[in-house]
Length: 89
Image (cartoon, rainbow, N blue to C red; front, side):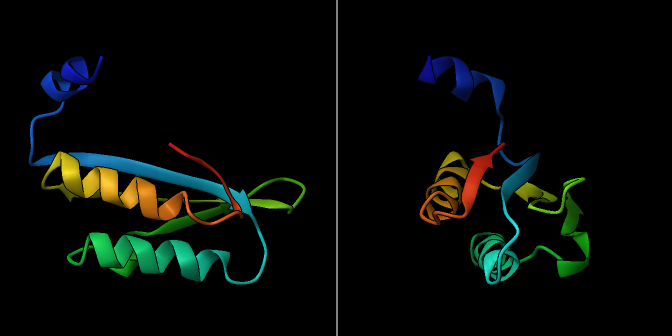
């Protein structure tokens, strides 16, 4: 399966990411900081937020130019370390 994924993605490529989590203090800062650490060229203006209808959850999304599989994997791993993160798509 991993070889199939490698053949689908050719780097560099545009890569959309969406992080869904509990809308609590620190969540936005955590996601934004990790995006900027792993994608330093990302303009903070290109990071978008959307609250859930009930206001308990929030999704934070961005599209960036991924340079390598390692970059994407490191970003997913870093984001997954926060217990407020429910999903990374």
